[in-house]
Length: 272
Image (cartoon, rainbow, N blue to C red; front, side):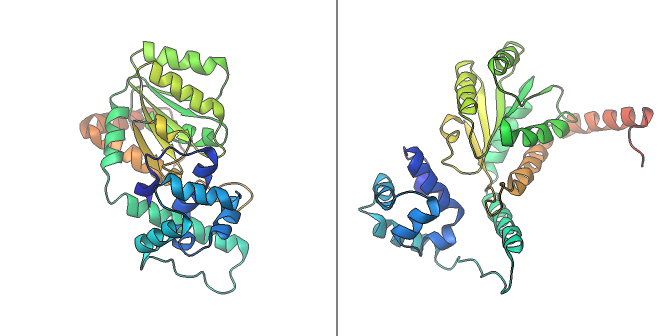
């Protein structure tokens, strides 16, 4: 599914359709063009143009291909009587299952870990809804990485802080790009590339607006069944990435963790 859309040059409207295709592949393959348009909140002709942008004659040809790709993989129906809240949680469980399947090939995670572990300092970028995830990563990464800089606010200072990180020796930046994608995030990633930084992006889809600026893209779907998005899968992917970073140099990781524990005990940081 991801291979169909990865690398294609898509308009913003087509990216929205692609996100629905990737996130709801088990059902989209059995919907009409009109139903897909309603799901993605676009016009029906947009769905046809999207299929043609991927190299198909029209939506029916794309749907046939989707059915071939998803044959035997349709999700089991939710238990009868589930309410909206239960359905939202079950949908999030599906996102986690898809993440687990995607990690069968951990090459991208290991590539990202290698770039981030070697960057001194390591800037971590997350704006608006993605800011808490950047902070979450930064809190734990600081225990195993000598210098982590969380950049979670925009404005002109953001570009200065990227420049300062590059001047201090940074080689890579980690960015969280989650819906709704701030325009300022894309601008900051463009600036990071100008500064010569490698870009690792954690995002919800291989066709998110930040993916084409990344050297390594890691994806985890965002739940959209409630008023505000659920970031469960991106948070799990964050911990997976931290594990991979810690495995780059296990001896150094162990030394830093032991130093933290010694310091925390001396200062009685925790109650247990």
